[in-house]
Image (tube, rainbow over all chains, first blue to last red; front, side, top):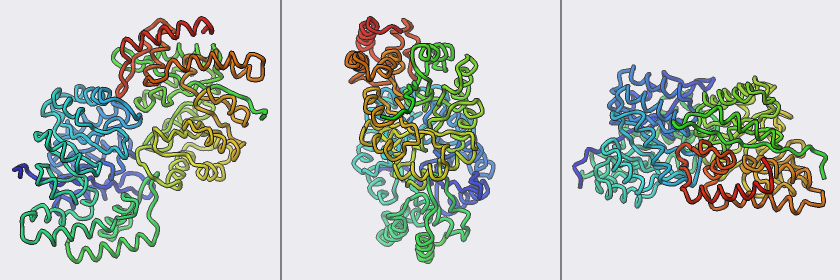
Length: 300
Length: 300
């Protein structure tokens, strides 16, 4: 068992107004509620945040709104990885200048079948351009990006950039891969992408999780983390699993947004940008009911 | 046999300077040479162009440079599809205002497993925002985008937007798919992504090709198109196949750039942005020799 601090970072959803602009008011309100309810910090502009449907300017403005609202930048690990390195550099420089703890960085993800050397070059280009204050959390999500963060690549990046390589989020869903990263690189903070893997992650020496469900269940997941070795860990795990099951079989991002809308009794949170579509009425109603039932167990 | 005009559009490479900025001088020079040597037009900012490694501002500036150089905008079908619809709208509006024939539009490509309805919404959002002058060529390249352009989607887009849906580039490499698109939607211009499929494409009623090899062999491919029904079509086909074989087994984009560098006796054309890496010396030498041999058959 490692003595590493276990933390929960939320890939916060990005609410939209009726005309599908970024809804800064709801974004900030949701972010503050997440931290008040148990999250250690936020990883905004991740996959769940529909970050890849936002422009560079929108991402910068929304990040500034979080910081202006009083959230400590040390609690923020915004996603900054774009297809074009110049965009990644702009976002990463901006986040670093704001004092963010680090950035969660996708590799360039349009071109597939590229070499580790090419992906290394892409990360190196960004790190060299942003400078020594940048801390990078590598983002491994091959089912979306098509570009894996391999052990070889991590090793090479750490050899070149030392503690500027601060961590990794493993969204592959493959525990064997997460375990291999933690075992090979204990000096970096390795996060699982599902709270279902928190026990394994913590036992192996990982750093916690960055999970979509945290948008809906920060209190329950925080309780699980705090009570992993306690007598009621089975009940805590059951609560977390019950909330996660709400989203099974549904498009994850629209479902998470529908659940946040239900929790806040505010359908405005449910809007999504294309290529996502809003859930149909039946699914929305089912989510609302499930959220109500879960809420009787865990307050938000 | 259709009476449709058969055309060749080049997904022109984007040369870079030593600091990896867009090399506008080489870009324009190459573009003008392609048109002088047999291409009907250009589809700049496609996959081969490393478009997804360029920022929105870089793409706009480079397109303006082409138009300012005297290339007729009616010969240009620039790629404009980005992850974020607002970026796609900005590029598509810009191209339309410049008088471009149309735009080659990727669907939003980060999120996978999205519905046809969601992809329709994404295209509809852009078309509605840009307005009635926009002409869209749909870009089907599922091996990179992960988001296919299905027959159902095409049908729905044509039903909603009529002749604003002007065509499709099929980069899937699956002739059966191209044939199905041509058969179902004879009113749009369907391009193959390889000159090897020109005979089938033309016979079925397609519109020609938009192929990476056109960067290297516009004269030969144009001769093939013009001579499809002539007595020397076998020799024309052999020349085109010989040039294409230069790139087999190599990373396509660095190899195409190396070949253009060899043809121009200018290594500056060979630079690539990460995540691509320049070819090693042995491959570069082999390409130079192959280009020299091919050049003895076909002048550029």
